[in-house]
Length: 139
Image (tube, rainbow, N blue to C red; front, side, top):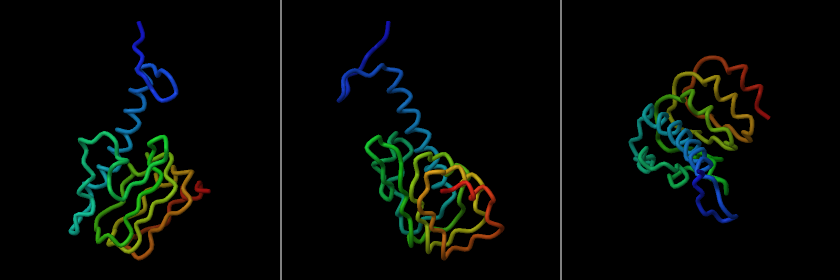
């Protein structure tokens, strides 16, 4: 017996909601795992709460109508720390703006998984190492 849940366009099977929730959880988990690698003296990430299953309500995160993260805007936010491989788990990300912070370490090769990315602004940080060849996958 299939359970159905009302939706705007009719009925959604319960398993569709679980898939949607899991996708949002994965996205939220990816962003929250990044937060754990950052020092945030200005508390700009205070709304990045892992208990909130939908990261679309977090400050500095923009989502599309399907509740998929399309933009992370953290330019000039006073952050220091690392970029993490988990950022490559944001399949619909269009903009990753992290300019003018104090980010260190390498650019993770997984950023190359963000094939919809339109803008990647990493300038004015202290990143080191080569630019990963996987960034050649970006449009």
